[in-house]
Length: 257
Ligand SMILES: Nc1nc2c(c(=O)[nH]1)N[C@H]1C(S)=C(S)[C@@H](COP(=O)(O)O)O[C@H]1N2
Ligand SMILES: [Mo]
Image (cartoon, rainbow, N blue to C red; front, side, top):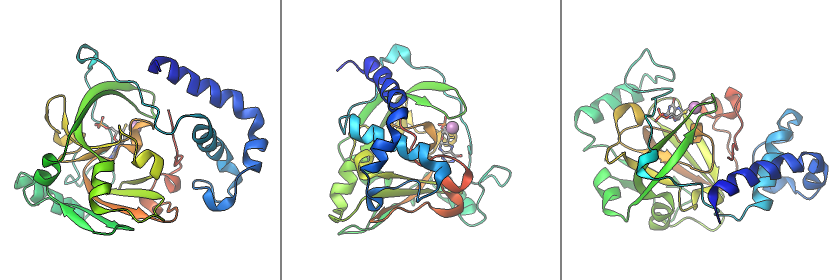
């Protein structure tokens, strides 16, 4: 399938479906709905989520580009979790991040816990030993800009397979060294382009872009691609992640593109 056509058709589908919202919603049982928990103002999010999930093949790929398409990428949001002047600075994790960075992240570990058979802490070297994926994709920010970059990392799927997710697991939540956390459903978590990226444009991930490791969720808007990862929690039930999650900050939980 041509992916530029796919992007168009995603938009067309969602627009075309707006009028049939009642029909779609009627078919949903509340147990399987993540993002609105009965809040009527969030019905649009729910409709988007259901429309994408019903009408797109589960793992349709986001468009990938050529090297010549790579553009400059602005660094946005928090660009250094150790800087107390930046948005989302955490008084405990900020200084911890600083120490890890000073040591070239050799003591950094990515913890994976929750509904998994073998909770594990991965070093950067552990992750780099696993089969890598490189993809040139467009990052689209909710503020209206986009940029194309090459990302290298390990598919989240491989890491989840290594720790063994429990059959009841439905969501993957991930936390940063600043006050930033997001979650995705299992479909996006197992998507081949959802990677834990340690490389950008052929180099180690720069500090401002999320060193040493960031999430790349190419099927959703940029804020789902959390930088400066600290830990991943596999969960059975939907969790809005409280004050550091998107919902309580006024953003949609599911932002498919
Ligand atoms: N930890 C963390 N991750 C984050 C953010 C942030 O402030 N902190 N900002 C998000 C937003 S809104 C965008 S657009 C992208 C920006 O990524 P970039 O700085 O690599 O361009 O990171 C996302 N991930
Ligand atoms: Mo953004």
